Amino acid sequence: MILNLDKWPEDAVAAIDWQGEQLTYGELRDFAVKTEHLMPSRSLFFLLVENNVGGIAWTIGNICAGNVPLILNAHMDEELYKSLHELYRPPFVCVPTGMADKYPYETVATSYGYTLMKTGCEACQMNDELSHLLPTSGSTGSPKLVRHKYDNIEAAALNISTFFELTEVDRPLMVLPLYYTMGLSMVFSHLYVGATVLITNLSMTDRRFWAFMKEQHATSFTGVPYSYEILNLMRFFRMDLPDLTLLTQGGGKMPRELNLKFAEWCRNTGRRWIATYGQSECTARMAWLPSKWAVEKVGSIGIAVPNGELSLIDMEGNPITTPGVEGEMCYRGKNVTMGYASNREDLLLGDERNGFIRTGDLAYFDEDGCYYIVGRMGRFLKLFGMRVGLDECENKIKSKFPGIECACTGTDDKMLVYLTDESYKDKVKDELVARLKLVASSIEVHIINEIPKNDTGKILYTRLADK
Amino acid sequence: MDNTQKYNEAFVHVFGAQADDLNDEYGKDTVQEWDSVHQLSLVAELEEAFDIMLDPEDIMELTSYKNGKELLKKYDIEL
View 1 (cartoon, rainbow over the protein chains, first blue to last red):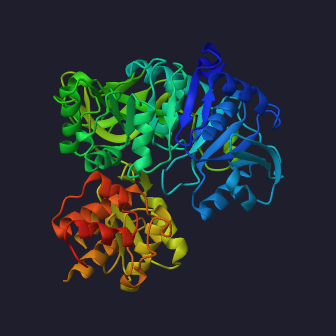
View 2 (view 1 turned 135 degrees about the vertical axis):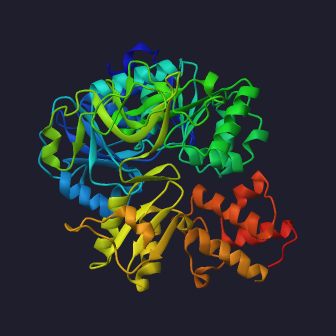
């Protein structure tokens, strides 16, 4: 069975959520068998999840059963849902039961708080290796999807559980969404060792969140940089959390001071602090900084995960073997996904990467072989740990305000939006805040005379700041 | 700028709200974007604007425009 799920006792607990729902390994296995009969074999379906036990049951159960879920946020933007639905025409959708009456479909089954419905769309031909699909972008939610295969799941589970040294006594607190690659990889790696995932969708500013963490004796916490900013602001260092022994971070570079604060606190209190690096294109984690280096090499992403390999290439594509020289970071390993899908026909495609990917990140390594990310080669920002596609933001603005001239750029601290028409200033900002659910102050709108472009009409982003 | 203006300004910065939108109904239940990211940003804005330091308990309580005003009273700030 996938993820070694058949290895654990019937009554061992696989997941608990804050509402008190619980799922044992036995129940998960039974559910996997049951779901095989709910849909024709190898069915494509949209799985709209919340962070709860049902979300885990439906995700893992269906992957085991050979159905292929596109895992999405149950509270995603409706426009985006529509465009995904039109593009991929899933024969089935599964949503939290409380939301089921919004859909005009025939109900097939209701289980673990979710309702499976039949859309009437015809069956979709898919590649035999395809296991599940995730959107490429956290908040802008591009209709472009990452195609995962079964081997990716096994590889990610093995690699991640190995370097975190996970065992069946672990009780990780999961706040990252299930539809987000790092959240999902937490589930894979912990189920693989028979651990108990404590899953919650509570806000970290909610008192019930802290009660759940303490009452359920969470042993580890995984977050993105902003999660740790929240912990810091919540005066985390003064809290009494004796069960918590491992803190892990991924999802973008953490501000140095904050990283150091957590690294030192962990060192001083006998805990492990492990910073990681990953991409959804590689089933999450690709590198980790061993806790012995957490303070000394703060800011480094460390070394490749077990069974993986990092390397650098220069502009001409030649390997870089000297410490301190910058180049594009590449990764090789079984967790590299098959490629992207942009439409339904793409789901038939096989593995286009063969275990190798150019990350699009500029990096160098030190004498110990630890990598440091310098910047991004691609057009993405990480605002509060959520990947925001700049091209997608431009498209959203342009489709909402036809004829508008705009260009998006920025840093991981702030997105800069350049417009030529002053009258759209507030409207564009409001649109981005509403659609991306970002903090308004993380978006800055500048009015310039014209958007610099080359002869073929491509925006010259590097010249925007000059205007 | 008086205290009410300073208080409103924090909501404008965090939510992109207009001053006219702000009333006692404005909060976690009525504002879709109101999540922990926004709540903590609001905390930071208020701490800076009024030169105060909120306790974790207060941070957890800051779930509406109305609650925020009540909280500030504890720090001797009248709106």
